[in-house]
Amino acid sequence: MATTTRPTNLHPVLNWCQLSRTEEVTVYRQNQTITTGHVDMVALDGTVFWIIETDGYSRTMIHRNDEPMVYRKRLA
Image (cartoon, rainbow, N blue to C red; front, side, top):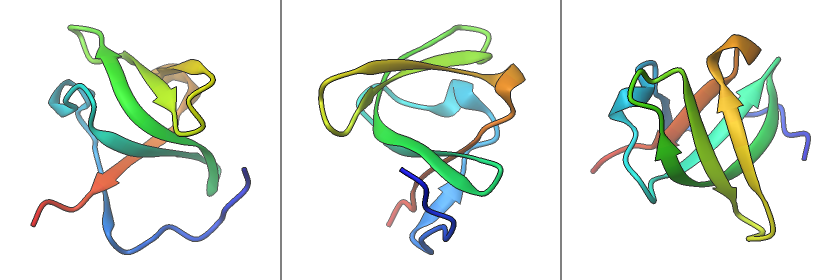
């Protein structure tokens, strides 16, 4: 998945402790979409979270040291 344009209905999540379980997110790195899916689990210190990818076949760990940008849908 290599998308370079971020949809306008998404906004960044800088503090991962604010992510909620089952929340839909998109993860970018170097202006490319890495994955999309739903948050499964967030570490208490907010340095890592697990995402169940949209295709439903995999669960991926996202770590702050990898320097991803995490976006979620804007709240209405």
